[in-house]
Length: 233
Image (cartoon, rainbow, N blue to C red; front, side):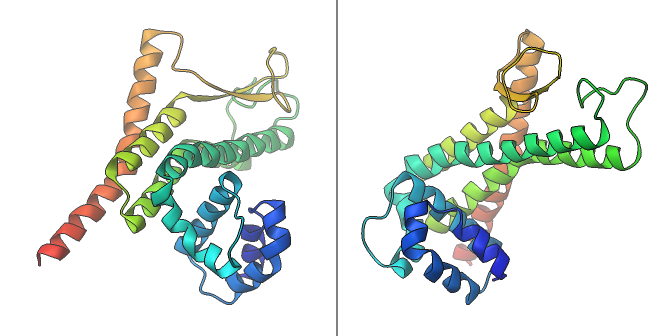
């Protein structure tokens, strides 16, 4: 694994855990094959360590046993973890928006509307990429949840809870950014989770949630179908 990536993944763990296992675990990551699955596994392990700190055992045992914990505590892996992952993803989205606001639209009251005309060039590419990431974050989180569920063969009910929670949060999340509007937040940017103030907006939120749920659950259903066919043959 790339040394920089190994160091960043190790930093996801709590401070006390890093003081005890950090150097050894980072060296362990660097000497092993690194891929998307390995990175996702380490992220899940770090999240679980924040919820249930390790009290005994060796580093190697801890680094390999966390997937089994999703079976012993599915409410944490599929109830709490989606909230934490989405919180991190939305924090990155707000930071991305704030940076673009300062760079490309320093005099505008809000980065969502530009007085005098539309946004072109590099600024348009920058904000479109941020918009794509913002709407794709719940789907990426849902796929990460499915990866763990597929590997551990977790009951479908727990996976459903995690995916529904992710879809609901993704469909009700709204970013507010204005220099003049009165709202709480950092850098004139804040987030809220609401279904909407009108019947139409509620319907739009429900449709958005169903869209997220469909896009996240489809790969899992395809995986289960392929697995069933391979068993039959």
